[in-house]
Length: 174
Image 1 (cartoon, rainbow, N blue to C red):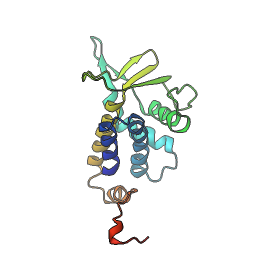
Image 2: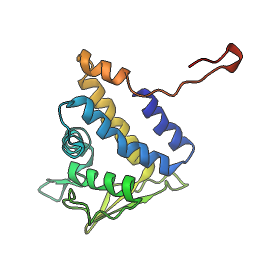
Image 3: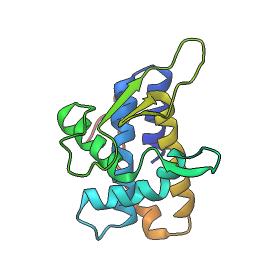
Image 4: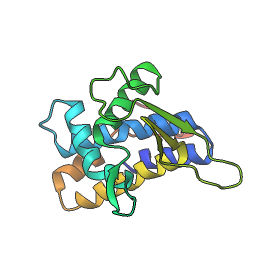
């Protein structure tokens, strides 16, 4: 999992925003599969994982009464995941999973360090792509902390795909 987290961090540092977004949208499904291996539904496991680990980062209290307002729930995350990964789109109006968001608007970080993130206007959620990636990392780290005492889940994390560096000077074998 650390390789995926580092890939997001490196993409943020390199300003490779599409990579940040692509990796960020895949990790909750990977974590969800490890969390509930019996679930054959990517939709169900991703939504459940996001509702538990990501939605708290996108829940704000508004108004005098400080009413709880969810800006990004698991279903809308899953709708974005499907729209972006399968269609290259930020418009989720045709996604069956969608609940409250019609469109996502991703922006690059501003050069003066100002952060404009997590703003909802009608049914459009505007997110700053680097902050979104950092939020995914926070959610994944919280999940990793929750499963640290589960040997089966830790073994699954340890068996995730790893891209190996080969030193040709030492020979090459498959």
